[in-house]
Amino acid sequence: MLSKLKNIIKEPKFIFLQSILQKIPLQPVKLYCFIFLEFKGEKPRINYKNRFEVREIKSDDLKSMSALERKNISIFLKRLEMGSYCIVGVNNSSIIGYMWFTDKNSYTEERTGFKILIPKDSIYSYDAFILPKYRLKGLWVSFQMYMLYRMGELSRSRIITFVDYGNNISLRSHLRFGYLPFKKIFILRVFGKSIFFEKKI
Image (cartoon, rainbow, N blue to C red):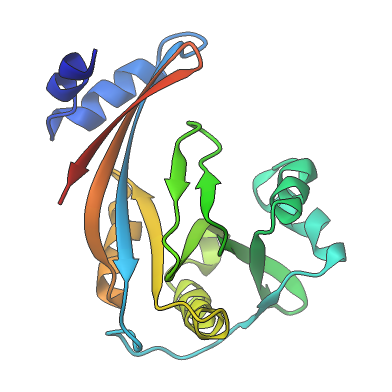
């Protein structure tokens, strides 16, 4: 099975195959590729102006966060119970985006069941969302600057994260900030069971 997986993940055919699988009713087969990146510097490579308030969430923020993407609040509550942190972006008292991170030993990716091992010197950042009209206006960079602050507080020296293959806007943003890719994870999910294949960059 792994040899077959290696044959179908050759780029640039990946996105084409992925789009075909998404059109199959009930999507019994799904294909993912995650590009993992790390930030090890103390300062970003880009300049920015902070236009939005960024803070950690409060209990009464969950309803507003849920409305941004129509996610069930139970997803956020589970993450908090597992020890994850969340920061939100605020504009005129309204939440316009959020980003999650954790300093635990591992995190299980919710879509695929892939267990991400988090090194002791790192924090893991995941599930960032910003309302479309506030994208590319500095909030994502403000999130990253807050992460650098928390990285120091937690005595960590790296931030690791991943970007879905094909999300070029997010990938370029990470690279401009100073993140460097270090591996790709390909995941073939068939009827709820996953096969993982790792490729170093």
